[in-house]
Length: 173
Picture (tube, rainbow, N blue to C red):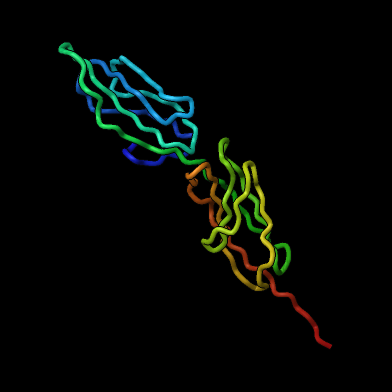
């Protein structure tokens, strides 16, 4: 991954570096289970696999040549954010209420953040897949998005779900 970059939950992580020796030893910090070490390996890449979201991971390697070991390389880092919610739908159920539903694709999120017209309106707990937005103005148009979050990391936004509420018609007599 790029230094200081972001990966999405479910992405297999492969570390790679420029060759400078015959064998390499490395370590990864920030994993929930502690430091991950690998080496001595004869390859210039190391597959970490799929890592839990909500963490920033830092890593470094050192090389071994016939004349000895190098110092550790510069430390690189990357963060893993939760998976994006998908299939967001916004259904008007009255002239003042919209019901939202989505598919929760994260196995590790702390919850979901609901946005109306780009403004955060609600924060829900883990495993949530619906929200009812009430007290809206009849005839108004709104655009909704949902993000998964874990700790300080938010997923990318879901699809945009637009909705226009109906106008109640009254007959005066």
